[in-house]
Length: 73
Image 1 (cartoon, one colour):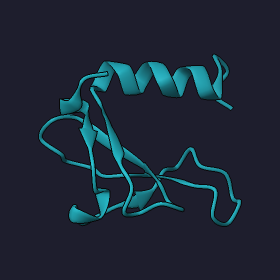
Image 2 (cartoon, one colour):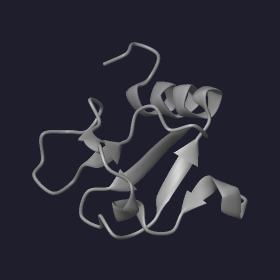
Image 3 (cartoon, helix red, strand yellow):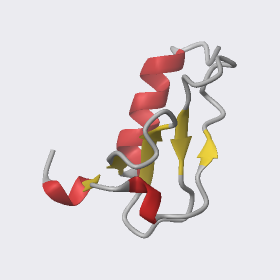
């Protein structure tokens, strides 16, 4: 992964929301930021000042399909 796909301090961006694919566990959530010009930033909710990874649309779709499985559960 190249440096352009990492945001070193994710707290610099506003508008994070809990991913609909995160479980109901408190503190164990992925947060996503919609409408970013370079893809979909994803961060760990337990580390809001940590880095965020930026996924392109096809990479995010592949990741979600792998996580939830082909049945979409």
